[in-house]
Each structure stands twice: as structure tokens, then as C-alpha cells.
Image 1: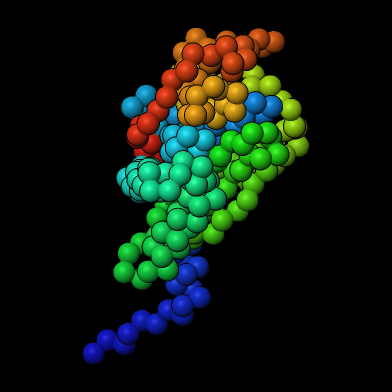
Image 2 (image 1 turned 30 degrees about the vertical axis):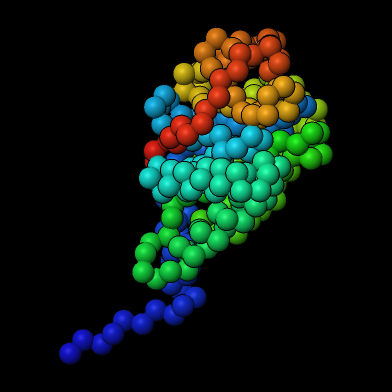
Length: 255
């Protein structure tokens, strides 16, 4: 008769956390920055079919790294929650804070459940306000905790190194072109401190633009506009950009 193998609850939770962190670290990074007119999302993502960044509601967007099928389920659930709450109450009642709380409960329940593996995902939920001081950015790790971020945040890949680089260089009042170039510079750095080149075709970029006249503030930055913004010394403002909405676009798969 075999002796049952005992693992303490503390060790079991530590093992689950390590498992989730390793899965998240294998994905390519996503960077989110505040700039003068809103919030910009920049992801290293060569896929045109699968997205890491998506619209959730009028002023709210979602970014994720990790396993595609897991964070796609969360994204769809977030869209349904926002639509139902906005329809039942008022559109102003749909907030990034409320959505982050819903995601936190879901991730926390899954992480604590011994019956299933933890989700290998890390999320960012952001809402653009009337002014920069009203912007909200929340980071949600695999265990369902909520981290209130300001200025800049990175998840996935070598997120710690990227976050340190951004903290030293990000400032309030940056233009979209300046914020985008800073984000790309941070993503271009490898674990050994070297640099590589990232082109517009390798990037997925979207913004929450507070100056858009529509209720929906989300738009993707694509093609020629993105290339111009990345050119040294160049960059049109986001107000000049053609609007493109993304309603229930899917997110990128695990790398």
C-alpha cells in the first residue's frame, strides 16, 4: 500500500503561483502608458488575426498576456458584464474599477480551486477620464489581486525590466508619438540589456483618446499612421487619426 504524498497548503499555493508566472513570462510583453490625451496600449504582436488589446466599453479597454483561450474567455465575460450593467442601469455605471473587481473574483476563485489549474494570464483594465488625473489603470495578476497603477505598466515577458525602464523615462504630458516611441524602446530591450528593432508590422497599438467626440474612446492605430508616429522626429497627433473601433476582437495567443 502506497503512502499518500502530502503537500502543505502553503507549498501547493506557491507551486500554483510559480506555474502561472512561468506561463505568463513566456508571452510577449504589453505596455500601457498615460499620455496627454489619453492612454496608449502597445503590444509586441505580429499576428493580425489575434489581438492582445481590445475594447470593452465606451471608455474602457482590456489588455492581456498569457494563454489566448483563457484571457479570451475573460474578455468576452467582461464585454457581457459591461453591456448588461450599462443596459440595466446607466452607461456611466460601467467603470474600470467595477470590471477589475469582477475579474479579480474570477481569477481568485480559479487560483484557489484545487480542482483546476490556475489561469496563465495577467490582465490590464484601463479607463480614460475627462482629464489625466481621472484616468484609471488596474493590473490583475494570475491570483486575482488588483494593483492600481499610475503612469505606466508592463506585463508579460521581461516585465520587471521594462517597468523599470519606463519608470525612469515616462513623464506626464507626453504626446502620443513620444509615449509610443518610449513604449517601443522599452519593448525592444532584451533580458541582457541589448536592443533589437521592432517594426510597425510587429506591433499592435491602440488608444483610449479622451478627445474623441464619440462616446466610444477606443481606436486602433494602424498602417501608415503608426509608421509615421514611429519615425524619428515625426508623429501626427491622435486627433488627426482615422477612427477604427474594435468591438469583440479576439486577443493574441500564447507565444
